[in-house]
Length: 270
Image (cartoon, rainbow, N blue to C red; front, side, top):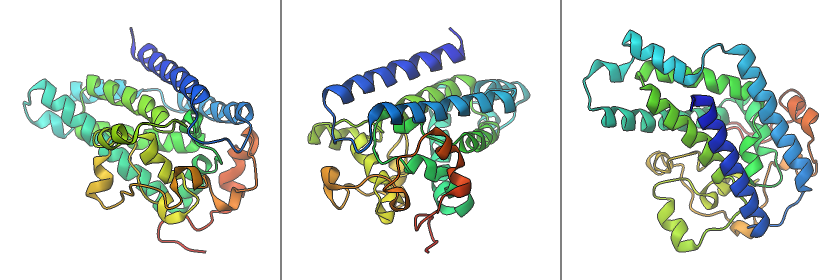
């Protein structure tokens, strides 16, 4: 089974499982009609995938193969046991994604792209697909640079890609975990209860809990927030400047160029 088949299989399987879980036991009531939201959100990831295929002739795993063959990158400077090199690469790539996420909140021009993700007035598995195609392309550029700089092994990159895709869908789920389970689980992975705080309309909550896979970075760098101020049932999801608008696919694509940024970019207030 090749890289694409593995990634697609895991992606479709987790998305289907989360959709079923949300249908059987939703954590919060929906603001917008689910079919229209899912059409827009899936449309975004489909267009992003098409853009990446057109712009990038090489995948993340292929880049790792090239780096390994040429001896590029930090991890290729030492003769580490394979399992240590793989684990280190996965953890370090996750740290890169954490800082990338902070960057997209800190730089106003990048926030314009990222606010497409946050403009969703609901929070469910499809929200994990709602990224502007230009953001996905920029994210891939940073990821490829990180893979070369680290010298990450191809198997480490494949593991990371599968984890990133799968856990991003999981931690955007409109599902509830038992409080005790959530407390333990969020020590090793970002849970829906943890990440939902990041989608609050309150800017200090939006600018917290940046992790996607590993929850350690938020605790280490002081961006961790355990619970939303209004509680998970009382909190409002989305961005205040779009709180009365249901955004379809075409408006979402234009949003970075037409929408107001509000008070969410870190260090910038209007």
